[in-house]
Image (tube, rainbow, N blue to C red; front, side, top):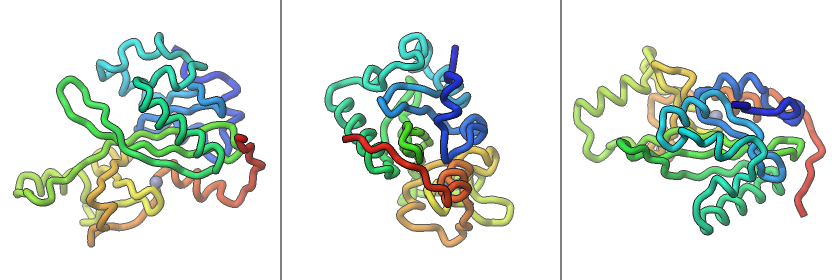
Length: 213
Ligand SMILES: [Zn+2]
């Protein structure tokens, strides 16, 4: 299946194509009309691994309005209002949503990054991890350590979006609300690849934005 059309790359201002391609988080992009214009390889992988995505691309090929992929009037209203607002204001929007598989209850964090030329939105989905803080035992503690504590004894947190880097798969960053609320004492601050592009690499460049009336 086709993941993007050739003109997508020229619309992509303020974030590198290769950063989206290499990200292990599921990413898609919307045009300013809120049509699907891009899926990264991790998104395709995620869709394939999950029942939800078996024929998702036959159903929702490039150019499909995102509203068609959203179920229920209230959900549609919620996303469209917030996506349009993000486009109009140029402000980052984030929220959490459920996307469980047949075997697993899962919550995701979604970050919505408006392109700096007003041409669309980059939508980044990361796993939300609730730590069992008030019923923690040695097994949980070791599992958490193995997943997030680097050999230096430090946890790496993106200083911008606050996601936590995984140790064994450093290209994956999780949303861990307990550590957003209270930064762990062994946290060291770094920056994730998408935030690096979006907030630092191109931060000095100004683009004319197109406001939605
Ligand atoms: Zn970040």
